[in-house]
Length: 186
Image (cartoon, rainbow, N blue to C red):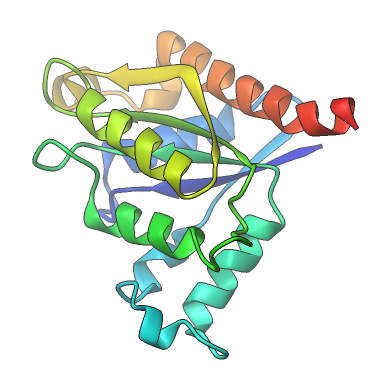
C-alpha cells in the first residue's frame, strides 16, 4: 500500500483544485491511498523563532503526516502567476528542521487547474522548484495542468471527466512507483 498526502493550494470549499483532489481520491489505482491534509490552513506563517523545541501544534501534526506518508501530491491553482501563499508556507514548514525534513527524499508530484489557457503551469513550475529545494524528490515528468477550469468544469465534477481521471491516475501511479524505488535499491 502506498500512502499519498495531498496538499491543496486553494482553501475555497468549492475550488476546482479541491475537486481535482477529490477526483484523485475517487479514482486512485488499487494499492494507492491518497488523503487530503486540510491542516495547512492552520499553519502560522513560517518563523524560525517559533520553530524551536516546542513548535506550534499545527506544524507538529503536519510534519507527522509528512513523515508517515510515502509521497506527496500538490494540487494547486495559479494565483498571480505563482503558487498560493498557503501552499508555499506549508512547503516552508515541510523543509524544516534543516537536514532532517520529513519531506526529504519523498516523491512529490504537482498537478492542478486554472482558469487561464495554460492551466497554471507557472504555479506548477514554482511548486516543483520549492518542493525540490525543500528536500522532496520532484517528479519532473508528471505534468497535469488543466486549462480553462471554470468553463471545463462548469457543469461537471473533474472526477466525471475521463481525461482528468486518466491524468490523476497517472500522477498517482508515478508517485507510487517513485516511492518504491528506494526500497528496490536497498
